Length: 162
Image 1 (spheres, one colour):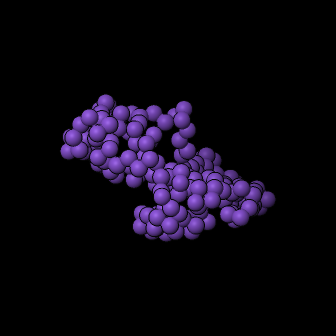
Image 2: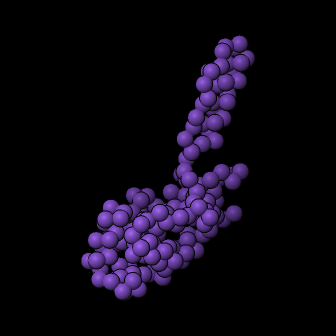
Image 3: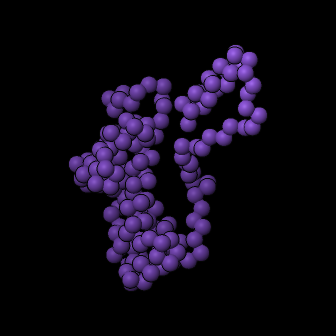
């Protein structure tokens, strides 16, 4: 949270200039988010079916694999897969597919200058229009507006034409 860090540093400097005492305790600021890297992306799930399903979802969701395809790849029924997911994660496999897809899209919007059409393709959408409609339904805002609000500071404002 760079703005908050800067504000707190300025307040501390002001206190020093005014010869006021500084707080004796440390100042802790919550991170704005945690970025998962491949080296730390561990699947801490005990259920081997769910664990394998999560791996498949991460690898295949861009190819349009849905609940039916996932169950077929795991050679189990959809209701059985649903039960395993609910017991292990508290959500169904379809929700996990959408969550994984949204996680990727949000990361690409905030951390890259990738054009919307390329983000749509990376996330497995057949067109930028379908991607935009889906994102608006899921996030309650357009991908462009989300990018403007959440883009990491690259030293200048985000302009997709840069």
